[in-house]
Image (cartoon, rainbow, N blue to C red; front, side):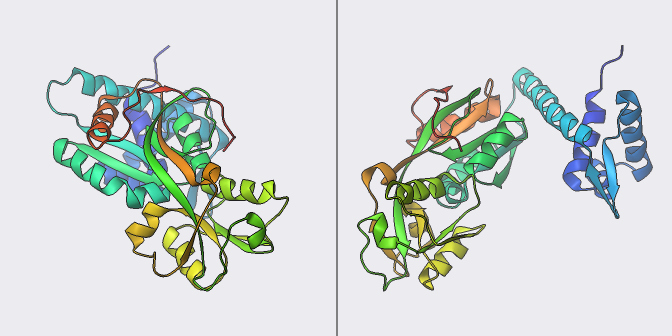
Length: 303
């Protein structure tokens, strides 16, 4: 039986990433009919429908979702083999995930140096919560991701790379906060479920048998800080984020208990690190981050 060819899988993945045949054809420098034919041939080969039509858009079927996971893994392995056999500099895409806070405050200098050293590598960076990023790494949709404690990810490798100090922020006229009870019936501003920082603050409330009156979810730290400054509620953020946003004067900062305040960001990946990823680890070590070798992730609080 003939094996699936990588070219068909690359066409399939591009259709998914570009959201349709038209843009995928332009990205692949192919005519639309050729892309459509290759997708149909792949569906006939597998005996399943990979897409279903929803209005004027194509949506992955359940079988398509399953194939995408395997396609990402196979194409990544093919890239690794090609890169490993090259004697020249590293090339190709490096798909990374990151927390919003890490992307904004920690990665610009790291990725800038990486680009100077390895211009042939194209970094594709996406942000999300710890929980969402871990799922994407496990499914090979990301090669690696920067996530925060606490988390649990059996089967993945991890290394700590950044130490963070978390602070509680409120409006400037808010009374001093020494205990969770000082925030009773307050509003929590946070990212969606799966955010490890949000879990730390919720656990702090829970230790005092309290619940925030309501939780408002946001997609960015600038939006969270703006609403905190406006008196909408409180939030927990890394001090490095406040410094990078130059927002320290717009809000009041309150020290958190040691168990909540101290936090580490980890780089996690699945299986053996690719040459491009190993080069990123080297840049992190040069920057003074991540001097601990990769190791299996220990069980911790679920994301």
